[in-house]
Length: 352
Image (cartoon, rainbow, N blue to C red; front, top):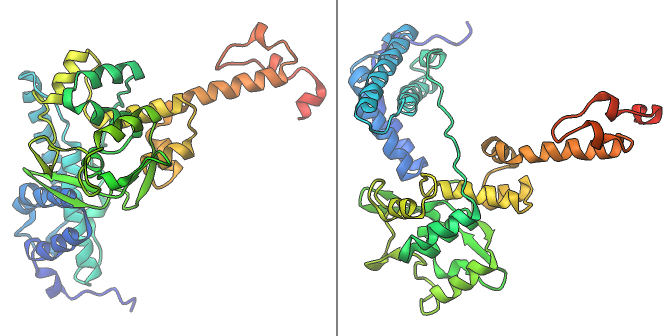
């Protein structure tokens, strides 16, 4: 009577029979790099467990048991990695992505009226994805790192002072630099897939312009002086038509520059975080920072870099202390704290 009846015969189809159509849809709608992770999650985690299972036979308890098994396997793997002194991962991202693939396929089944409800969406034992600690370099650190990067010195400076992502920088062409306005247009993104690259839209799927400090702009002017407008600004050292490949994590040129410059361990993407830190230190507000980094809105910027705006709270306390303490603030208050006695000293101030 409610129109929610689903014929049992429609639920006899297996997950593996529905997966190809769902994956094709994702391939058409997502970036190549993102699709590769979804395809890998299907092949490595979802298909072995659920491929031959009929969608009508999937229960909430079975999905939660599967997640528990993956979490235990991830913990055992992490312990083994730790014992060998290698890089330790809790596997949360892999587990969340695998669950997302299964849930997405079942969402499609519900939409096609093959299931009345997606039971995979009700699980409660998914791991929490830990937020990675941001690494920020000082301007002096950046200068040392750049000098130790050899032929990639200017490349490192652009990452640290302009804030683009790696794929956005390697896709940058001479025509994208506006020397008159001191701006770079970030329009494309080149994602490395194995030994090849796939060029497409930026992560935010929007074209943006970012400011370029004058001391970098002049170096860019000399760097592209003899290059045609369509040439890559930072091409592969051995072929100007190819994109610059990512350096090896352990013994690549970037890791070597980090060691020689004696800065804290970082990745190339940490230079984007460094740019955010340097911009805030230079007085940039959250709206300007959001535009610089290509975030959809200021909320995303605040959620990502809330720690960079802690000083703003101190300034608020200091400003209120100076305005409302009646000149007694310096005797009884300090940065980041105040007392009611000092905050309100006159009746009219209390009313205000």
